[in-house]
Amino acid sequence: MDAGPEHSTPVPDSTELSVSSWNVNSVKVRLPLLTEYLKEYSPDVMLLQELKTENESFPALELMSAGYSCLVRGQKGYCGVAVLSKRPIKLITDVLPDAPDGGEQARYIEAEAESGERFISVYVPNGSPAASDTDGTARLEYKTAWLDALNARVSLLMKKEISFVLGGDFNVIETDGDVYDIRPFENGAFTVPAVRGRFRKLAFAGLTEAVREKASLRPLYTYWDYQAGARRKNDGIFLDRLFLSPAFADRLKDAGVRDAYRDKEKTSDHAPVWCSFFGRKELIGF
DNA sequence: ATGCCCCCGGTTCGGGGA
Image 1 (cartoon, rainbow, N blue to C red):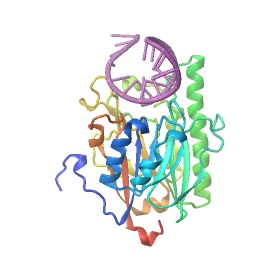
Image 2 (spheres, rainbow, N blue to C red):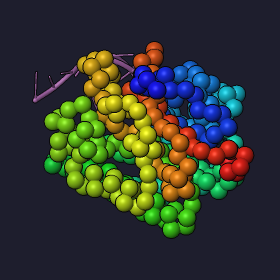
Image 3 (cartoon, chains in turn red, green):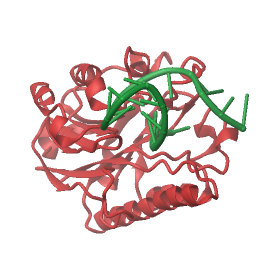
């Protein structure tokens, strides 16, 4: 097959389970594009980050009209995460256990389908600036403590042999090749060993990252700054991920970045990421 | 070296994003 642009990738077979994740940078501003995405690709589960709104003003009615039930942990200003699903889901927790601030910031929501499979949306703290002043140290320590809590949660789910998809904006540059130019980010909150090491623990725990595994986009980026013509120059960063527990990884069919959504009017600075799985939904109980 | 751009809260500017 010709290696055309990523957005030429066909829509996944609707009989197969698919999951998407998108840092929308305001769900209210992005609602028209979000509904367009849901209509075009019809993901079974959609993970959202950076809602930037409280639960009361989350557009649940509009998304229900598009065929989705919503579990939301909103927050005004920034943060805010949600799980949308075409099938019934119930809330397991909207607080990451042992998060450094007791879960005050809305960065974690874990939902369970009737199949028992879980779908988790995360918005990892930025941590910048990581400078050695008091404020910067506190931000970086918050990020590393948050990642410790996330790794502890993953260990628990793995121990219980729960199948899950853990997706979202991880705010980590895993390798120097995951950014258009590593120099401005060296020794920063996206690259310091304390952050990269904790991120890599997810793989050591036995998770597979679907986007890295399958995406055809090269170089592989999911975020482009609004400023300085970053998208036009393809000055991107690979930040958004879909981690799979072993049972999901065994069924992984394809994954990618819907980078065409980064070029639309009034869009987010992140593009949606997605993955699909072998096996008819009816037979796998979702 | 800094700001560029975008969104929020809540007013016309500062905080946050990454």
